[in-house]
Image (cartoon, rainbow, N blue to C red; front, side, top):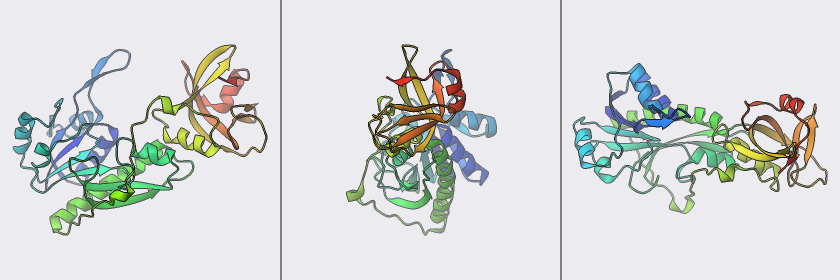
Length: 312
């Protein structure tokens, strides 16, 4: 079956690689335009483009600012593709594009639909304390992540797993789910299961503001936030160090049992025993941190370099 692949970030590049490694015929790749990045503001290609140029230069790449135009609809029709496969493309694909493939337009969504429709399903699953996640291979429709589901693959979420760890599992499940769905289409045994609209939840984009730790919350809630936004965009708090307010990014943490009556936000330990901060009910031990303007270090290295701070 001939495939046109739509995707932009690294997770899409990794899933595309998995498809090509398994000899899926990809006739065109659609990705977002190059963007200025970093302090130098140098124009850099998205990961999907970089991967295709380096490993499969024979595959044509399209980079429209908006794909759902008459111009690009005509270009895409010329490939006579059986399937359009969309993985984190970064744009709502409209009906004129959804109608083009001969068989279906398929999306890989990183949640167990109808739970966590929307932009940040992996982050929200961990922040919300979900015990499992997975991928839903679904038929694309105009409504947000509302199409019928072809296949679902699940994975547990452990207490120490962060969103980077989950993304690696989702990549593999996405490849496996797509291969199974493509096989089902080839054999004519594909089944579509409508989503239960009564169970829909939404996973909105993560804002920088909500990544700030509120130490008045329960320790488990704080721990879930930290791992749910690590390695990106990253949880943080503010410290008072030598009478200056400093931003501290928290890269890794774990729960710490504490039954004291110290107020929330109290730095309980800042010594060889670790960097431990009181939460509403218990405490959180910081394991890896990054002070603004500095590199990320283990907590024990951090406490050796500074005097005990307080929370801002």
